[in-house]
Amino acid sequence: MATSTATLLPRVAVGRHLSSESVKLENYQSWVGNVLIEEIRELGRELKGLRICNVNATAAGGALPNS
Image (cartoon, rainbow, N blue to C red):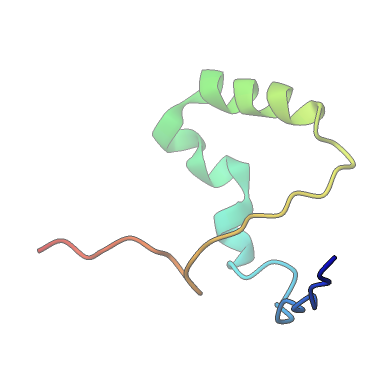
């Protein structure tokens, strides 16, 4: 039986990498309205206390610029 050598993943920075302004739900209220904001809050209540890890294939962003 062959054994494999585990390759360790590189260390990554953990924490908020966006400005604190971009993570405030209230900043989007004028764009999406009160109903959607309340729906997001209601759905988010089930996530309270959990840690969420967002994995992206790029260091920042990922969208291609308009040609």
